[in-house]
Amino acid sequence: MPNQSVRWGVIGSGNIAHAFARGIALVADAELLAAASRTPGRAEEFAATHLVPKVYTHYEQLVTDSDVDAVYVATTHNFHFENAMLALEYGKHVLCEKPITINAAQLEQLAAKAADKGLFLMEALWTRFLPGIRTLRELLNAEVVGPIHLLHACLGIDRDNDPDHRVLNPLLAGGALLDLGIYPLNFAHIVFGGAPEATTSLAYLGPTGVDETSGYLLRFSEGRLAVLASSCRTILTEEASLYGKRGVIRVERFLRPSFLHVETESGRKSYDVRYPSSGFQYEIEEATRCILEGRNQSDIMPITESLAVMRTMDRFRSDWGLRYPDERT
Image 1 (cartoon, rainbow, N blue to C red):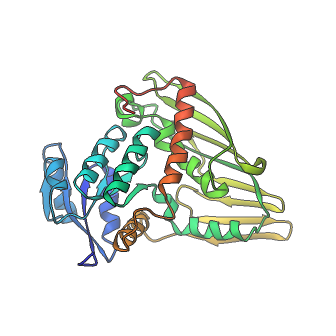
Image 2: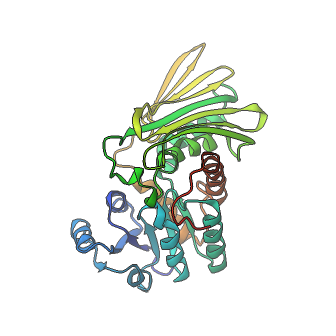
């Protein structure tokens, strides 16, 4: 790329877009150049808050701006496929908020389009890029507690008292699985690698028809198990426990790790992996680096990993009879 800097545009202006804007301010070779929102006044307000030079009220205006190199998609789940495809069609690299699509068939289409156009495509699963996850990978590679045989992790928030929240809205592809369960599922892939050999799940579908609490059991190669859960009707601990032959690794707030504790017969050792920010800059740094190096995917969050998780979530929703209105494949 001639200017050795990536000029980003943001589609959407909700909370996650603001987190992206705060993160990109910490990345030296990335610039937030443009913002687009279909809601009157939102793009202007967003641009004023984050000093964004260009403001658009139609997404097509942003993706046809020749000064924009890459697009971050920050809309609700149901629009991710449509917005990401639009950006790819017009030759923009894409970083799309999780879940990158609402089913595997949609993601396969995005991946094919990106490959055909020679463009970068990545799911914005921001936790994969945090310092604590890098440290955890090092501990796993060193087998400090031996091979991991069982993982337990769950994530939950309480939205039960807010029936209008997007996470409970089937029109917005809501539910605990796509909004929260995607984090422990990705964490299991980080710990064990590869796709699971077998899966099963149970869910409680609430009054709006989406899963409000769901549990997942995954078996990976060599009999390794992940016991996971997510909920949008009750708060669940964010601690993850990784059980090995010689001990356990406990991850405080695995969604955004703060401390890792290694417990073995010889004692307990703790690792401080806190970071001085919201943490969004790490995924932006990775996407920016890949784009500047001419790479179409990230080794940290490759499309194959996104597809494996998406196919697992597709199976779960099929088992529950949960299909979103107007869900395209």
